[in-house]
Length: 95
Image (cartoon, rainbow, N blue to C red):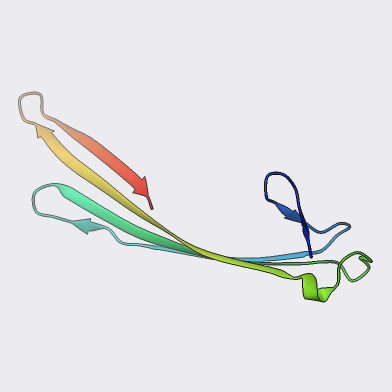
């Protein structure tokens, strides 16, 4: 089995193969009252494999990880008519 260091990271020594795929999708939804809603989601997939010349690990020690991460942002456009300026207020959160 792969060895994890104290921080929980898994490492194959020497060498190895690290394959990654990540996709991100988001939308911008504008309302009629100056609020923009931006939902987003990210998918990540990773496979860690030991090198073929590694005597400590073999191909059965391959590690696969996948995760989804979501995000929501809100942007509010405010107009300061007295000074003729637009002010943007934004808030974002990851889930």
